[in-house]
Image 1 (tube, helix red, strand yellow):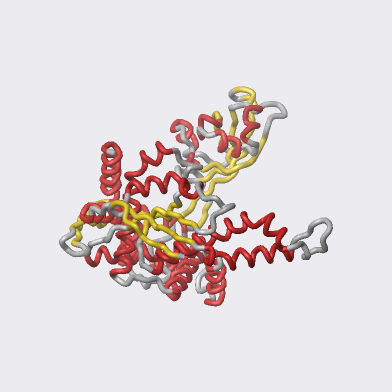
Image 2 (cartoon, one colour):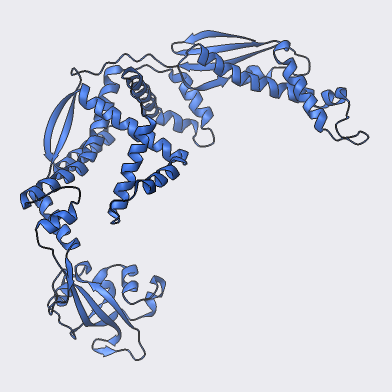
Length: 459
């Protein structure tokens, strides 16, 4: 077998594969012998059908199959052995292949089109400047988090008079009309969270109630949602129309969460891994946590800005004619020719960015080790279990969870991709010139939204 690369155009080439009979003769003979051993035919004992008959019946199809398998293996081996960076996959010349006479030919020529990857000439440095937004956490946000924490670790009390944050335990009674309970109508006991009531007039009536007080209202008017309305009276959504819209509630109990005091006991419960003594330290720790959460979104935006900037400074040429042909052939069941043409600019940038990322990974010797994967999964599982109140879990239990996750190849690919993304993000922050901009989270969301809308319009 002989393979020759013939350059066709910029970044496009053809692999010419010359195949002689001696290249495939032994493989075809071996497969025919295998078929002979398995063959069952009237008049012959199993496995005793004459080889000549097997060859006559299956010789052509076996030869075609073995030749095609050899072609695929040898073409990819040639590409690997010669360090040829390609985009997409080699495309066989179907027109030339259809002209082959499998009955008479013993020597063949096959042709494969390939798209060559351009060489990336890029060095990350402070000559490349990108905005990096640091999210400033507002005092109001910290106050809101503290209020939530105090309620989460607060205690339940039963006050005499209801307020806006309270839960009413009530009996719901179906009414015939205002002031008249329906004879043999529906009666159901359920909770009603006052702050979830949508209608402001009804909400006002529910504030200031005592045990034994009653109020009448239309369910759908109160909550503006059929599923919630049905749930309050203990029926299915599709059954709601069978009942009167008007109900009377009678308060049987009032529940309220009394917020926990802002002291060291609360600090320890909310931040078990930190030693916090004062309210100021508590606020600083919370601000750091909130900032980290917000910074995830800021980092995503930063990564997108880096991608646009690096695509701009590299200006990589692509074998567009080949790529369009390959995309059309590879996705002919899913995309029309028109769709491929319309979406090609975005797809082309995807190809370019993959080349750039691969260049940065290899050029900066980035790798994700098995130990890093294990540590990441262990930390992830501890965080998950902590959210469910499980602290100080034995490492053997964590290891069991990690082992189960590592059996899932799809999940492992996600983990490796995420860890590589983090390494690349760290690389950008280290190598590029960051134009740091302090901004509130609300202003950041507004900025990103407006930028996205402007880009979408221009596209």
